[in-house]
Image (cartoon, rainbow, N blue to C red; front, side):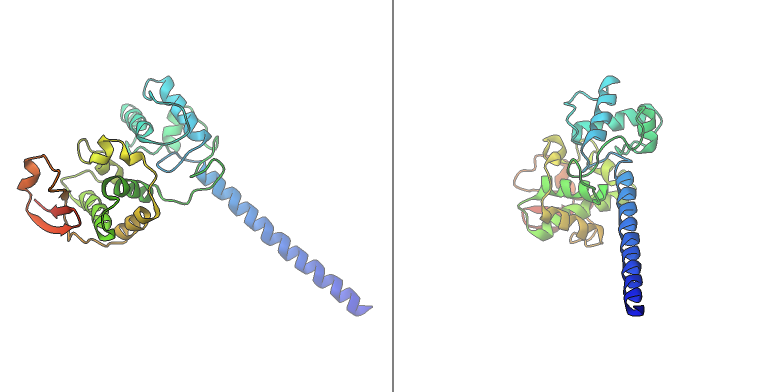
Amino acid sequence: MKNGKKYKIMILVCFICLSRTALGWYQQTQQQAVMALSYVSWGTRGQLVRDVQQALKDRGYYTGTVDGIYGTGTYNAIVAFQRDNGLTADGIAGAATLAALGISVGTGTSGLGEDEFSDIDEDLYLLASAIHGEARGEPYEGQVAVGAVILNRVDSADFPNSIADVIYQEGAFDAVRDGQITLTPNDTAFRAAQDALNGWDPTNGALYYWNPATATSRWIWSVPITTRIGRHVFGVK
């Protein structure tokens, strides 16, 4: 009888432990959901992005389709709105930007899928997008090198001080001009971006790169070439 009672107590304790574990997991995922819904940036999509696009469209900043997909048009519209309203022009619709647009935080879905949570950092995603648009088909080292050049510019006093601003600096990258920046980066681009963020710089500090076979700018040839990887050459002026 005593053994049976002990067994029941053990079962009850196990049940309580499992319940607490499940509750903790649920609360954690709910917290992640709130975090995922709190901003709009590269890599996000869903209802919150639609809300932002519609609000920008109503104010004359966004002219594209309200499709819930964050792309170049959404970025440009957010940056223009932020500049006109005294906000940090980083293309990220965080709490301050959402409030200025009249959107309550937590009214949409964020992530790479309609109902998924995204743990992909926006800088990583944008850097991978630039690498994919600029250097897919290049050797892996060459893809890391393109990412390194972008990061070197961020660190340079001669360029903007954020990844987004460097990439979207007018005339800086062909992938922005021709829209390839909006293509979904592949796994190789993500790995190359992460390696660049982790400090690998195959260019040894280069601030420029170009393809000698296709470059038409006379100025770019004034940059001393320090490294050649794949079809690209790299240099510092």
